[in-house]
Amino acid sequence: MRLTDVNSIKEALLEGKVVRIYHSGERNPKISEILEIARKKGVPIYRKDGERFSAEVSPIKYADFEFIVKKALTGGSFILFLDNVVDQRNIGACIRTAEFFGAAGVVLPKRRGGSIQEGAVKASAGAVFHIPIARVENFASAIKKLKKLGFTTLAADLDGEDLEAVSLLLPAAVVIGGEDRGVSRPVKKQCDFVVKIPGVGKVNSLNLSVAAGIFLYTLSRQKY
Image 1 (cartoon, one colour):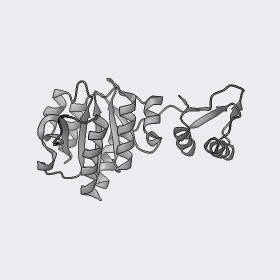
Image 2 (cartoon, helix red, strand yellow):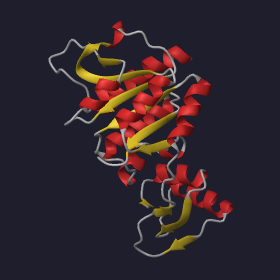
Image 3 (cartoon, one colour):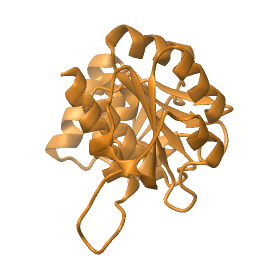
Image 4 (spheres, one colour):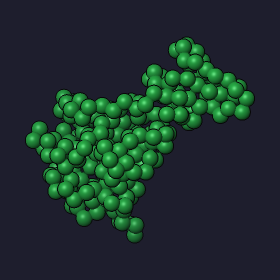
């Protein structure tokens, strides 16, 4: 994967994910800092006139779902599921939010947008390198498994009950759906609660990454 966002490159470099760096010789404080870190870490730097500052990074290594589950159980934490979310910027923004609020991990489907590309890395501000991300074949089966382990499971949907009316106990899992398709019916059927964020404006919904932030903040208050 080739990254061009300097903040993402720095985070990848600090986590030992950068294979090599390309630049034209142009300098600014951020680029100079990255190049200095790269030299200390022994990362090859290639200079070529007209070359855009970029870095080649190792492919994202996905975590085992069981690892994230154990982490949530041990820490009394929560997990974010992204169902039918295909926009890389939304995926990245949600991962950034999950990492910020201390989620045990993020779960993506193996299909329907279940991958991390450069757009998600940039939107996450490098958070993809700091939080476990797993991919599973079947969200409904995964949620069913979590319920048996004592997780409170929530699906976000405009037709749900108010979030404030639901008793949230940790560990928990929250499923956020894509803006076009939302959370799939089999997944909603498996969840303990289908909930919405109450609002008073004329617009009846929020961007999914904003909604994810509200849900995860609410869950984090139960932990911290």
